[in-house]
Length: 414
Image 1 (cartoon, helix red, strand yellow):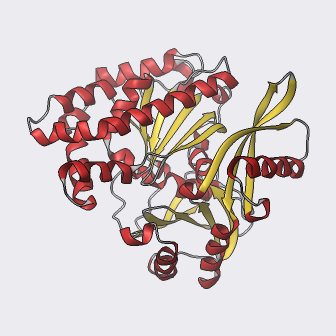
Image 2 (tube, rainbow, N blue to C red; image 1 turned 90 degrees about the vertical axis):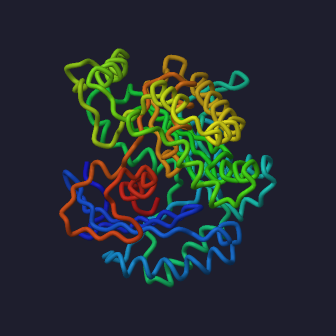
Image 3 (cartoon, rainbow, N blue to C red; image 1 turned 180 degrees about the vertical axis):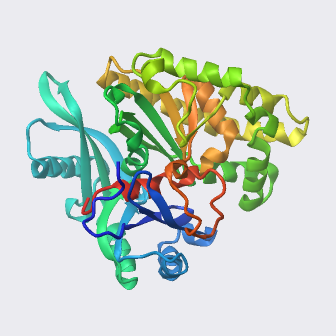
């Protein structure tokens, strides 16, 4: 499936306004799609929670990245920051128009979060029909963001002389970034839990094939882990983060799987009828966008690794937040099962910059108990050697780019 939906031959520039990083990506449509340019800049810690300082930083960084990255064209498709987006499953009267559904959602939002309906931008995705109080209703995922958040993004783009191609919620973009994997007949029967481990929060999305059917934002992210560890180690947050990632990555030997183990993982994935048979799912191969996360093996290797006392300190400090995150993900799974009683999870795919913390991924994989992968959205992109990178070298897996790549696939004026 070609990326983008523009009549212009120049693909849009995807802009991911993350909590901790600003990312820009441009991809040339085609089979395979071609990576043209990617740029990233870390948002300084003091600017992350200060709206004025954040806006000032972005106003300086965005035009510089566009220039230095050699991005072409004047159309941009942007993310609506997850930590500023209210995500909620709601039920509305079935059969109503999109406009009527929007009105119902704003009315419910007014009751739930006491907001002025005129001050929020609301989008929704229909999930399916449900019954509530013996009445047929439509289950929808509501995405709501303060209007001034959108207006600040528009102001930034205007200063860069960029046209607005669309705004999309991060959960939708994450699922979109992998939709090309579901093109065969029966692929809509594959049920995937995407876990986007971010700096400010974690996003959980459950998709049937390429269609999103559940979404939730969980208030646990990398910054919470770093703050907790900083308190335990009595150091600053930056030092705590460096220590956490160094201690929680499994040893290189633990990441080297034997051919027998790879076969076992893939055999488990294909035993479910939803995932398919050996003949039509290419048993023995993993999509280039996925890397297996051998939960039990990695967790065991980490536990039996170095005898460094600080390793246990890190694990103990992280345990309450890890348990909170696991509990939340299990509740997501249960809610999904109430909506779709005949659907169980076939696999988990981790994305987001914090998914580089392999011990966290392994803990979640073991707790939920399904085949687990780390997603690498760059894995599907063709390289020509002429692409331009700013802020990183592009030589490693980049799970944190799923939102940006998904924006490349999202339609304009969304």
